[in-house]
Image 1 (cartoon, rainbow, N blue to C red):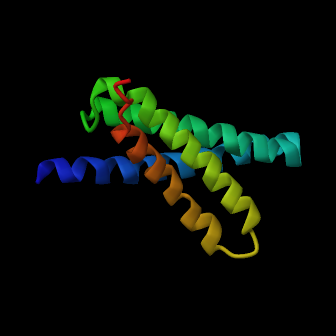
Image 2 (cartoon, rainbow, N blue to C red):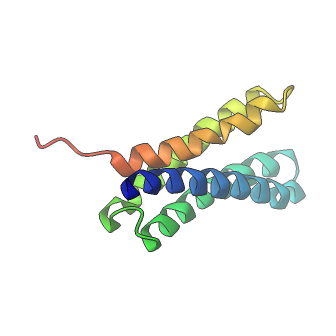
Length: 117
């Protein structure tokens, strides 16, 4: 039963770090104008996804060999979330729920196995 909580923790931390990284990045990027806002948000979210994978490794929620696949999954999830969020800005629901894609991507990345041939 303990192993069930590890992916849940990874999911929550990836969502929080990805969302916070995106928000902080857009705040900092806003100083460079509208383009900086978007670029800063994306870069911040990707950094947050990578940091979440690092936390998951440190807390032993994932095997150390799964760190980069987890980070890549979270980063790809954040890019998907950014696309959803920017296309649903008229409603607060889309941008908020899109953050769930970061956690989903991180969990999928942590569980991804390469084929044996």
